[in-house]
Length: 253
Image (cartoon, rainbow, N blue to C red; front, top):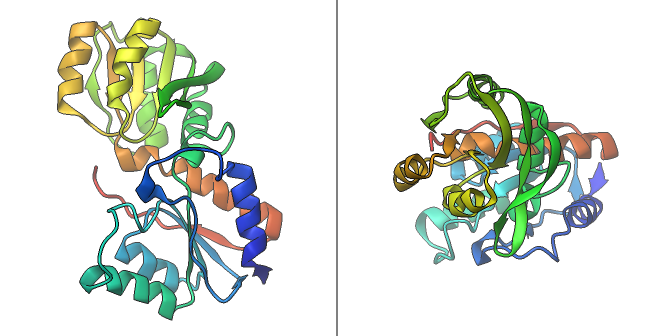
């Protein structure tokens, strides 16, 4: 049994929650508190009703999310929204969320974990959002074809997009940014980066990448953002000795 405040303090400090700007609906940090203690932790990408119920069914009293319960925006506490809040409160489930602070963390972040899993070399922060660098730039030692295959392997889902260069040519320097970051192809094109791996498929970005001659690979918004919350869970297991389980609830997007 661990005090909730000790876990929150560790997460807030590790992720620098108070310093990193984000969308208003992110509301990073503790979103719902419980009775003050934690015995089991669940992690997930999204704070849907089904995810909350899955956390409760496994006996968790803390749920850590990437997209918190306020991600759909502020809503009247009626109907489906009241049900979600009431379910957490009635079952003593605390909820903590970390969006951009988790995307950009140099070790635990979605992009750092993807870069590590891909085997990128000479990595550095890249891909700017709201004035901060949240993505990763690095060199892939294999071919473009091998890069695409490896991206699919680590995500466990199909990769779409467009490859303008020959699949047998060296991948070279690439950029990685999880989630919905297709719009950054303009900035990456100016930097001379020819290959970009991101999450959410965007129709216009495919034709734009084709015009630019950029290799653009989409792995899915959800699939590219499962890494960070799992890394947080592993950190809390090591630090507090609490069991932590990842709830895989893919959206298909």
